[in-house]
Image 1 (spheres, rainbow, N blue to C red):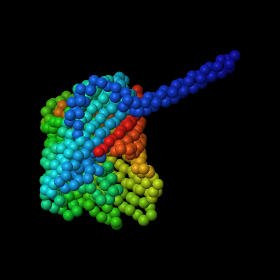
Image 2: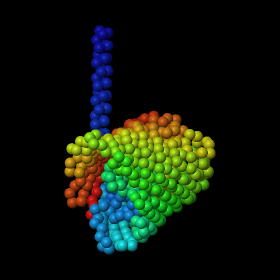
Image 3: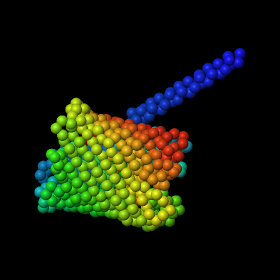
Length: 548
C-alpha cells in the first residue's frame, strides 16, 4: 500500500510538472502571438484615434518631405549640409526641384518586466516631408518642411526609480507633456549654398548633417561601410526617431584635389522624441575634418581625421552620470568637451575569394563635465567578407566596440565617453543601449536577394565597460529641459544582455518600400538587478516609405 501511495504521489507530481510546463509553453506562445498582433495591427488600431484630427489638419499646412529612411537614408538625401537634393531627383541647372516623402511606422514593444507599469504596447508615428530647391551656377537653395504625428502612446509605460521609461513609448510620452496623441509641423531645412572655387561651398541656414559623410566614396562597398559603420557615431540627424533633428548655422566644405576639408559651427534643433522641432537648443557644436580617399592594391579606402567641440549652455538641466543626485543638482557648471579622433576604412578585392573590408575608428575626449574633468575614449574595429556567391550576395562581418566608463563617482574626474549628438540606432538596432560605458562584441550577416530585397541579422554580446558606472541609453539633447541621455544603476555588475535581431527591406510599387524588423534581448545580471521579474525584452516594427 505504501508503494502505491508513493507511486500515486509521483504520478500526481509528474502531472503537475507537465501541466506547469504546458502552461508556460502556452503563455510563451500567447505572449509572442500578442506581440506579433500588436505589430501587425497597430496601424489599424491607432488609425481609429480621432482626437488628433484638428491637430493634424493644422499640421498639414506645414507638410513638406524629402524621403526618409530609418537610419542613414535621410541624411544622404535631404542634404548632407545641403550639398545635394534628395536621391532620385534629377537636378537641372536653374530648374526647380520638388521632392517629398512619407514615412509611417507601427512599433511593438515588450520591455523587460517591471514591478509596475505597462511594458507591452504598440503605437504608430508618421512623418511627412516635402520641399523645393534650385541649383544655379553660383549658388543653390532649398526649403523643406515636415509634419509629424505620434498616435496611441502608452499612458503607463514609466516605472518609478531605475526601472524608468519602459521602451521608447514611455520616452515619447514623457517628452510630449504626457500626451498619448500629438502632432506638429516644423521647418526641417532652409539654407543657401554659395559655390566657391575648387569645388568649395559655404552653406548657411538650417540643414542636416552627419559626421563621416562629407565625401561620397566611388566604390559602393566602401560607401556602405562608411555610411553605416562609421558615420553618425557622434553627430547625426537621429533619423530613426519620429521627429529627427536638424542644425542651424554654417558649414564650409573645401576641396583639395581628391581630399576634402569640412568645418561646421551649428546649434542643434529640438525634435527627435519631441514633436515640436522649430526651436534650437542652447548647445554649441563645432566640427572640423580632413577626409582623404586612398588606393591600395586596387582597393579603395578612406581616411578621416576629425575634431569636435561641444558646449552645453542649457540652464537647470541635470546631468546624467553616476554621481548621487544631490551632487548632480549642485553642479550647475557647463559641459564643455573636446573630441579628437580618426577613422580608416578599406575594401580589399580578391580574384577568387570575394571581397574583404575592415575599419578602425577611435576618439579621445578632454574638457570639463560640469565641475569634473573630462577624460574618456572610445574605439571600434570591424572586419567583413563578401564571399563570391552571386545568388544571395552575402556579407559577413564581426566587430568590437568600446566606450569608456567612469570608475569612481566620488573623485573629480568623469571617465564616461560622451557620444554628443549621434544616430545611435545605426549601432544599436534594438535601441536600449548606446556607446557610453559599453563593450559590444557583435557579428552581422547581410544578404542581397533578387528583386532588390535585402535581409540582415545581427548578434550582440553586451557588457558595461565599468561596473561603477551606469547603463546608458539615448541619443543626445533634444529639448531644453532634459539632458538627452538616461542612465540606470549597474547593481555592481557588468554583464548587460545578449541581442539577436533580423530585418527585411523590400521595394513595393508606385514609389513605396517597406521594412520589417524584430529584435530579442536576453538580459543579464545588470538588467536582472533592475527588472528581477523578467529579464527578456522584444521590439519590432513595420515601416513603409513613399517617395516622390
